[in-house]
Image (tube, rainbow, N blue to C red; front, top):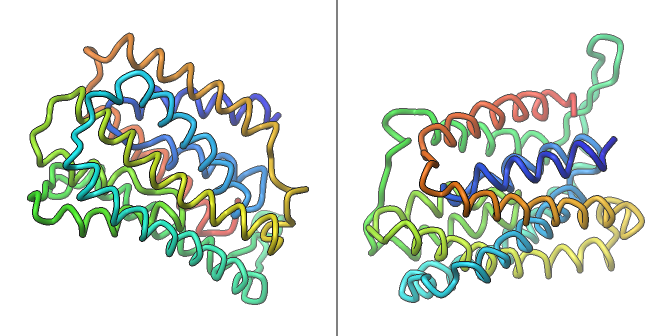
Amino acid sequence: MEYIVIPFAALVASVLSFYSGFGLGTLLMPVLAVFFPLPAAIAATAVVHGSNNLFKIMMVGIKADRDLVVRFGLPAIAAAFAGAWALHLFTAVSGSSAFTYTLLGKAAVITPLKFLLALLMLGFAAVDIHPALKNMKFDRKYLPLGGVLSGFFGGLSGHQGALRSAFLVKTDVTPEAFVATNAVIGFMVDCARMAVYAYTIILLGDAGGTDKFPAGVAAVSVLASVAGVVIGLKFLHKATISVIQSITAAMLGLIAVLLGAGVI
C-alpha cells in the first residue's frame, strides 16, 4: 500500500509546491509518518525533497538570484545542522516520555516529538490561511534571520519552505528567479540535514537504524516528485499561489491534528 499512497502523495505535492516554493515536505512527511517512524519519515522526506530541488536546479537553476542564495542560504545551512540534531535529541526524549490512551478501541501514542511537529504544522497552516499572515513579506535586511528560522525548522521537521517563500517573495524577483532561488536554497538545506540524519540513523540507530529506513519507497517517490516538476513546468502559467496555499493548509492542519492526538 505504501508504494502506491506515498509516491502518489509525492507527485501531487510536487506539482502543488512547484510555483509556491513550499508544500512538498509539509505534505509528504505526514504521509510517510503514517507508515514509518517519524525520524525515518523525516529523513526519507529529505531525500525526496532534495532530489526534487536538484531536478528543479537542473531545469531553471541558472536563473537563481546569487545574492539571495548567499545571504539567506548560508545561515540556513548552519541552522539546518542544529535543527537536525535537535530532531535526534527529541527522538531520544520521545522514547521515555510517551503518553498512551485508547481511542475508538485502538491505542494512541503521543510523544514530545509528535506534539512538537503537530504544533509546527498548525503554525505553518495558520501562515497559509490567516489573512494577516498569508501575504506577510520581509525586507532584504532580514534575510539572514529568515535563513536561520527556515533552516532550523527544515532540519527539525522538514518544514522550511513556507518561511523561506515568505521572506524571498519580498525581494520582487521574477517568478523564474523565485522558483530557481527557492530550489537552490532548499537543496542546500536538504544536504545539510541529510548529513546529520545519516549520522543519527546509521551510527546512532534513530528509528531502528537503516533497517527501518524506507529506501525503496523513497526511490519511487523521488521519481514521482520529478514527474511533478515536469508537470509544474508545463502548467506554470496557470498556477495560483492562493489555491495552492489553501489546499496545503487544509491537508497540513488535518494531519497535524491526527499527529498531535497520537493517532498517526
